[in-house]
Length: 225
Image (tube, rainbow, N blue to C red):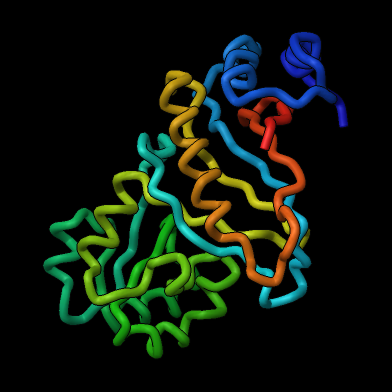
């Protein structure tokens, strides 16, 4: 793949093979050439899990102290708590009529779906539509529960879900390049802390192989575990 001029300039600033402290990595990131839009800063984690084994799956949430810079669009599925969901800031609120609409449209343009427990069986009707998008509410991602207002408020404040992909990797946006280094570091440290608490019991050794940080258009910088 052809590399951009900015990318080529970026790899001249640091050592691709070196592992840096988070403060050093953020200093390097700040020096990289910038583009016309506010790039997303992401953390990439390579784990030692076997993603094919159900007892080694990683799926959880983290409340980033400074959010990730993205305004999350939330849909709430509830019959009894629609007023609460709207007050909490849900962008789309509905019950069975919303499910019917999604069946007709074959899509829903949101970042997160939350639901009260009584809606979960009904949501099975649109599982094939929202499931592949990673939107199906799940207890592990704390998107199912009776306190729908609290769930929505936490998501709006910066609560983010993460899970491993088929290769055992985890990717999470922790902010924007416009964030100051202190905010990015605090978001990173909170994610790392939560990630360690989600180590699968089936893994007896250290389960994180390596971590790197990058922005949308930059190379990755390896970070010390």
